[in-house]
Length: 128
Image (cartoon, rainbow, N blue to C red; front, side, top):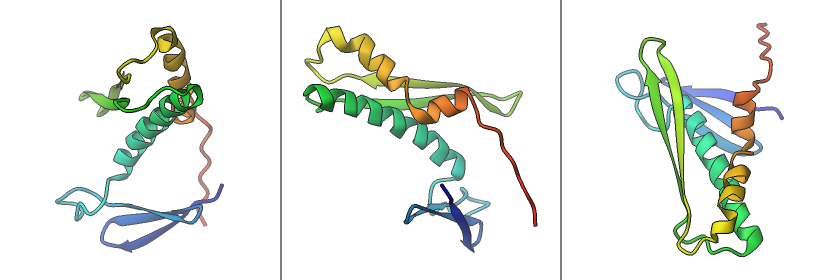
């Protein structure tokens, strides 16, 4: 995959991802707060990826998804100036079959974004 990045003004940054434009900005006072910050999109990508796995699990089994929910909460390590823990809470829909509770948890745990955090790829930066 190739992602092209452009700089439309201020501290906003845009990425062209497979024909979709993803805009980011920084909160005030550094930016205009016109879009999520890049790190917020990173966290959103984890939550939406895990949500996708939960949704597909239910859809593939004909389980109603009304009431299905997922939330992500972060715990910060102030001394290290980074996240210490990412807490994810999956809310199952009413009537969700108890026999599938462990299985949906394992399915959500297969999120590709999370897997890449647990076993990160190497980064290579070239400057020209």
